[in-house]
Length: 240
Ligand code: HEM
Image 1 (cartoon, protein in one colour):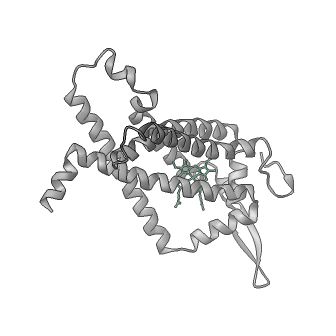
Image 2 (image 1 turned 180 degrees about the vertical axis):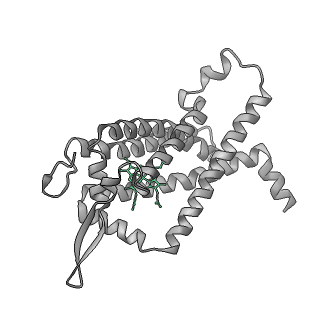
Image 3 (image 1 turned 60 degrees about the vertical axis):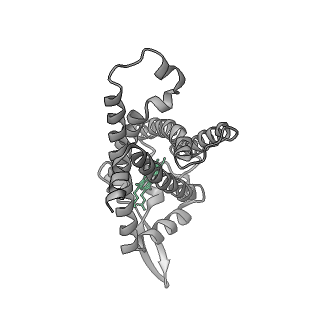
């Protein structure tokens, strides 16, 4: 136990925890994007999926709390590593440090904090309905055992939400920043977890970067598809 705590307190341990929590967050992002792609399939597909998730009840809350703990650990150790690095190197190099590192790698804390601010805004928007109560309150009536049944219209909420250009711009900006964060994060976590070999490192970098931008562009496509009418409310109605 003592040695585990010592390991977690060390720089190597902190890097390992960053990588491990990074993998879990990346898996969440992949899962969330796959779910969001149901928006392209239509209202019923998206709302069936959202209703199924809600129906998980306590299991959903366990996953949510786990995700929160993972996110908090990732942020805590990220800031800690950054501060430790800064303390170990009080004088900023004029060149060597930055010349090699890409913009994405140098700005991990900044892009990470922007993603954190985005997630807070996003939860207030679509999970809590604080930023657009009208869209959040939309309901879809479906037939259940021959009876009309009202459920949360997640599809309608997203479509109505992205008829507001302020949200389209905020989401688009955040997705570019997420792409930058993941483009460095994904390949560096592979390396921390031991996938390191002179012959494969350039490929790992390419795959990590490629995957990051596939995810960012996938998310970015949604507000744009709504804004330009490729994803529209039933009957092609314009909610905005
Ligand atoms: C344009 C892109 C995105 C769209 C359209 C979108 C859509 C949604 C929707 C509709 C919900 C609520 C689901 C429900 O009430 O059933 C949700 C929840 C959530 N989203 Fe997103 N999302 C996007 C991007 C992201 C990104 C990039 C992240 C993380 C970096 C993220 C993290 C979350 C989290 C943590 C939740 C809460 C999950 C829960 O309630 O259990 N989303 N999103």
